[in-house]
Amino acid sequence: MRLRYSGLDAEQFRGLFALSDAELAARNIVKMAAEPGSPCRVSLEDAVPGESVLLLPFEHQGAATPYRGTGAIFVRESARQSYDADVPPSVFRSRTLSLRAYDGAGMMVQAELCEGPEVGAACARLLGSSKAAYIHAHYAKYGCYGALVRRS
Image (cartoon, rainbow, N blue to C red):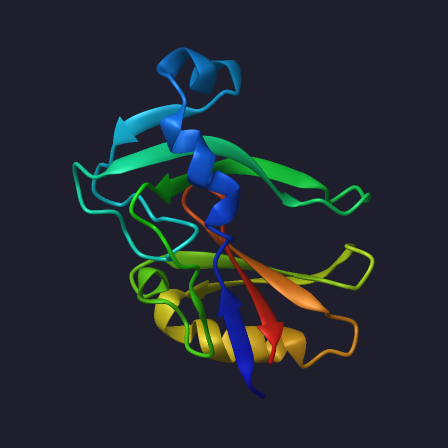
């Protein structure tokens, strides 16, 4: 089974970097220098320590179900292109992931924990079910949304 791993669209965050600290705070967003282990949800790469990032709330699961979900994410100011590939992003390799499979209506149908190197096989298992339409990969340690995984 071929899979597609996708980061978030950079355009939805572009204008935020021009806002003042007060304007960002009004939206519950913090502009900061990245610390080690700050994974960008657009490029699906770890930010370089000291690089300018936004830490912001993001609705990753917008379905009108009990699984509707929001969480904090990092976005690098330098992220110009969204990750979109048939191979898992390198940012997954060193992390434990929580994979949450949803049906077309946004109801969770299965979930699995895996180590980064096993993400491809784990996603293939979950998407092997006819009930599963897509997967949200989360970083298990903090529970933050990581990326979208679909059949390609």
